Structures are given as C-alpha cells and as structure tokens.
Amino acid sequence: MNSHAMHSLPIQQVATHFAELKSFLFEQTFEAEPGQFVMLWIPGLDEKPFSVSDVRDGMIEITAKAVGPFSRALMECRPGERLGVRGPFGRGFRPRGRGLVVGGGMGIAPLRYLVHRLERDRASFRVALGARTAAEMMFLGDFSRVGAEFATDDGTLGRQSLVTGLAARLCADEAFDVIYGCGPEPMLVALKKLADERGLDCQLSLERHMKCGIGVCGSCCVDGSGICICREGPVLDKAELDRVADFGWPHRDATGARKQPTAI
Amino acid sequence: MNPLAVQFAGLALESPLVLASGVLGTTVASLRRVAQAGAGAVTTKSCSLAARPGHPAPCVLPWPGGLINAVGLSNPGVEAELEELAEYRRTCATPLFVSIFAGSADEFGRLARCVAAAQPDLIEVNVSCPNVESEFGAPFAADPEACGRVTHAVKENAGAVPVSIKLSAQCASLARMAVVCRQNGADALTAINTVGPGMWIDVGMGRPALSNRVGGVSGPAILPIAVRAVYEIRKAVDLPIIGTGGVSCAEDALQLIMAGADAVGVGSGVYAGGVELFGEINRGLAAFLKERGFESLAQAKGLAHREGGPDSPLAQGQGGLKPKREAP
Image (cartoon, rainbow over all chains, first blue to last red; front, side, top):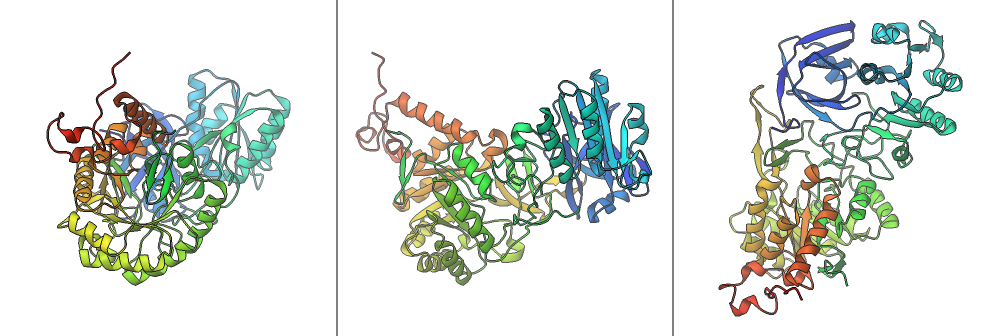
C-alpha cells in the first residue's frame, strides 16, 4: 500500500542527545532522501511533519526538540510504543557539484542525513552550523568528523557570530557550486542573498503550515507562485525561491490567514 | 474556436474543468496556479462568517480508493477571504466560484450578502460537508425543506451572482432535492460532495486514523456514485450541473458529461496527478472530440440518456452521437 496511507510502527530506539532533544528510530519501511520529511502521529493529539535526520542500517531516524505540546509528548515516548509514521513526503536536496551545507537550530537535523549522503557519494563539501549555545549544537560528533565550522550566539562553541557570517567567509575563501540550507527563514533569506551575490546555486528547505502533506489542501502554498511546500518543497532551488513572494515574510496559520509563525 | 469552451449559468468557461472546493483553494496563489494549469473556473475552499482552524491532523489520508478527509472547513473567515478574492480578481481573469458554509439559513444569507459584494462569478453553497456533523448536525443536503430554506436565503442575498447548491449523493431523492433547489431559485447544482462520512482504522494502532474519527470519502472510489447522481439530477431538472467526484482522467470527466453535467469538478485527483492534471484532462477531452468528430462538448452532454441502440434516431443529430469520421 501507498506509504502515505496511515501506518503505525513501534519505536525501535530512542537516543537522548540533550534533555529536550531526542532521536526516534523506526524500522525503515520506505525510502527517504535527505530533506524529505515524515509525518508522526500521536493518536488523540496531533500529527506533525519531521525531517529525516538519518537513514542507516534499515532504520529511519527522526530528531525532535521539545518546543510545543506535540513535541513535548513525543519526548515521553519509549521504545516499543507505536506512532503513526507516514512518508516520505516532499522533495529533498538534489546534490550537485561542490556544496556548502549551512544549518541553524533545528534545521541542522536533516543536514546530518545530507552530509552522510554526500560522504557516501564522495562529494566535496564544507559545513557551517549555528546554534544559540554549545549545549544546543546537535550531532556535534558527526559534524566535527567532517570538519564542520561552528558559530554560536554566546561564543561557547566556534565563533561568536551568526552562521550566515561563517558561510559568507567560507564563500569568500573557497569555491562552491551550491549552498544547501535549512534553518530559520531569516537565515535562509541571507543565504539566498549570498548565493545571488556569489552567483551560486542554492537549495533551501522552507517551512509553512502543513495539513495534508500531499499537495491537496493548499495550506502550505507559498504566495506568488503557489508552489506547494509539502509536495514540491520543502527544498526549493534558486529559480523557485525567486517565485516565493512571502520568502522571509510572516507565514499563514491553520485558518489560512496571514500570521506570524508559531512553534509546534 | 475552442471546442472545450462551455456556457455555464451564463458564464463563458474556456474549459469545463472546475477546481472543486476544498482543494488548493485557500490562497489566491494556489487558485491562480490551478487557473493557469487549465481550469475553466476555480472554486475557493468554503468560507464561513468567522475564522475556523479546522480539525487537528491527521485530517487528509490517502487510501487505495482515493482520499478520506476531515479538514473541518478551516478558513480565515469571510473578511480575510474577501481580501484574497480581491487580489485574485486583480491578477487572474479565470472565473472565480466562491464556496460558502454556514450553520443556519439565516447565516447563509448574511454570508452570501458579504460574498456577493465582491462579485464572484458564482456562489457555491456547501450544504453537504460530511465531516462537521458533531458540530452542526446532519448536512442540510439530507433534508429537502432545509435545503430549500438555505437556497432561498442565499438567493435573497446574492443579487445578480448566480448560485449553485452543492448536493450530497446521500439523500432520499436527488430528483426531489434538485426540484426544491430550482423552485427556490438555484441557478445551478453541484453534485456531489465527498461521500460518507467514512472511517479508516489503523490496524497497528487499533484506532480511527483521522483525528475527527470520520471523514468524507473522495477519489476514484466515488466516481460511479457521482455519475449516477448527475444522471438522476439531469433527468429531474434542466439546471446547469457541475459534476464532481472522483475525476482523474478525461474518460472520467466524459462519464459525468454524458450523464448530463455541463462542467466537471476536479479535486482529489490532484493528489495523484498534481495541478498538471487539468491540462492533461483538457487534452484528453479535445482528443476525444476530435476522434468522434464532435465540434463541442455540448454534443456529448447527456448522451447517456438516449434510449435505444446505436442506430436509434436519438443517436443522431442534436445531443446524439455522430458517425465516426472516416480517414480520407
């Protein structure tokens, strides 16, 4: 049956990175590319999209941080408990040429899978990651191993700067073909500007209020072109980003009205 | 001349295909995109007087026969909706149908008045949503008297804007329902809404998978129900009909047209086919007309109602099947 149909799986393993940041591993029942996402369902509560943070040894990994009622409930889930797991949804990264991988905050999760893929494909790449503080930098071991550079708001890890400053410096020093980015939208806007200035391609992962995940309900369509983030995104290329009229602007809420983004 | 052009309730549509309400109809950007993809008209997601967040997820699920949904009529409320509509008007010439939803005939009337002021090309009255029963009770479309009252209230307030009542396949008599709508002034009918409600249980979890537990069933599974509904309505009244339900290819659209539809709604089909589906169906319809030597879709409309065999006089001439053209 179509892997977008509801399907529940027991959690195989829970990895605690920090108190409020955990990975959940499920048996891999469908293929997923870096940048694609899955829907996790907790019955009686809600269903939310989560990017895939790794696929390895027949397991698919989702990494979540406690930010809202859903993710807080998810933190309480133990191995053996069942969750609805549907996917893969959307279109992920399409690796090409020499890449600069840039992530901020929770946007780092899907980039870990991307980096593993780039390594597997023996692609040439650099990584720049930003977080508020050292204690929030996830997958530090994975990323240190590939020579990632770090930026934190408080200077507890790497440089005390925004990750976009780090990215700009790397672009000035080295040649890249493409910037891969995932993180807060202001960071993505800065990366798009950097790519435009440097004449680089870019592939950036956007977030909008999603409901159906399959390109039907229209909740996540961007202004301007109407590109459907759940189906044609979440990773958009440069030409597509130029057709996102609300790029960097307030998002729409569950009713469809234009509102400030809200935490899940 | 465009062979797919149809006249619908006084409107000239470039294609019989209409984006069905509830699909890609929340924002002006997605409506415009569907129009550019080949729809002859687009219908907004149903709007109500006040904003509604809808039901929590999961609210739309694919299953092997199509989709099951309980989005729960999420919309930003009529005021915000009118801003979107104004922007659509400024940027897109394709006819715009506005779907409205309310809990009483009186509210429907007030809503119709607000919406009519924005001069849409048609107001579609959603009296048949099957996934908000816990909040609003049985849909008006199950009861001819209630449906008549809503139709009357909307017509009283819609001014010159044509009104289509969106019916459910699930009522004692669609023929009676259609007659009541016409008697109360309906300019057109849309048939059908999603069917049900239905339920999908995730066996692993042992629970209904939709947060609302039940939801409207759509997609290929309901096409035969929609075809039958349009056929029954066409027998009963001569109002223009938007035949909607499970259309995913040109042949599906032709079934509805041959059953008597003037225009064809496309909704859940975009899950499998994307917005490109509109262009694909248009091309398929044009190919069919060419192959059969028809000059327009009007010649295919209602074909399935003729009596007798292929050589019957009804198979010729107006509304009939022309002999297939021979290659020279």
